[in-house]
Amino acid sequence: MYADAVLSVFSQRYAGARDKFISAVETSSIVERVNNIIHPVRGPKNERLFCDIAWAGSPKAKNILVLVSGVHGVEGGVGSAIQSDFVGRHRRLPADVCVVMVHALNPWGFACASRNDHEGIDINRNFVDFNAKLPDSADVIAIWEKLSKQKDAVDLVGEQREQFDKLSQGQYSKADALYFGGEKASWSRQTIEELVAQLKPEKRDNVIVIDIHSGLGPYGYGELICDHPPETAGQKKARELFGPTVTEPALGTSTSGVKYGLHDYFWHQQGDNVCFLTLEFGTFSNQQMLKVLFADQQLQQSGKIDWSDQKTLDIKHAMQDFFCPDETQWQELVLFRGRQVIEMALEGLTTNANGS
Ligand SMILES: [Zn+2]
Image 1 (cartoon, rainbow, N blue to C red):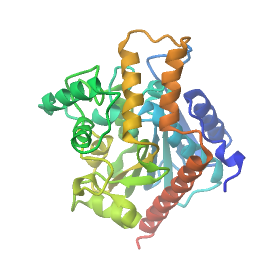
Image 2: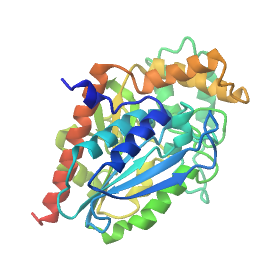
Image 3: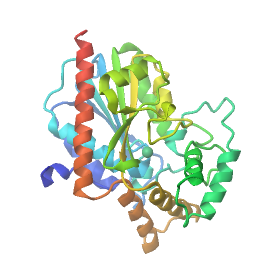
């Protein structure tokens, strides 16, 4: 299908993924501007970590496509590959279109092969109003206690499946458990807030955001998840752009449930001209996912992580193999779908630019 050279955009690890992205950006004729935003915490080898934001096409364009990778750290390899492939393949963009690539929004999680950030925060549950009353987490914590005790026997069918859906909604009271939304705006959230302040969505005609994730759904399938509320402009736009491949948690048509504090919600607030979709690539089963996540969570709670310990590496490699499998078939499916979604988004933006 695709040649090895095409698939070489994939890297399970942050350093390799960043090198590929930066070198694609440096040799690109369409990238006009790059911001390398330094993260406050260093990586496992004491290396500096960055969220890199590249603007392709004129930053003044009326139509914007935003591609985000690495909200969930370890999932970054997927979105990074799609971003590097995009930059490498395009010599020009449609008129009045700018593509903004946010590479490794949670670089610490990517570099340390964790889903959360350096403060244990799940970035994709962090976009809540911390000045208002937070969702009650008592039920979720009770489920967490139960599932984490049975973690080797979790089979996630029937009642356990419902419990898993409830758990993954997000919780705001237990920092050392999964799906913790935090107590304040995370570094990654602030980075997005600063980007939006520069982007000024209210001054654009159309903004489409594609946030790339992995780990939920059938192997290799790229599900376009729309969390815009039913009957809103955003939902209508998502359906218009991508047709019946759009799924909606609110309607029960997605592999994902309704969740608190999603990255989506922040962009939804920017106006009716903003359409946000999560592009979620399936890998293996939810049971398998919980197993690797539990092991990583336990490791993080054990204190300082010893990167020279083989047990640490085994846990981290299992995370990388789960969220970004190093398998040709999977990579081909991801690349095909990634290209398809981007081209459809660009077409949608240009159709609108022509006023048709
Ligand atoms: Zn994710």
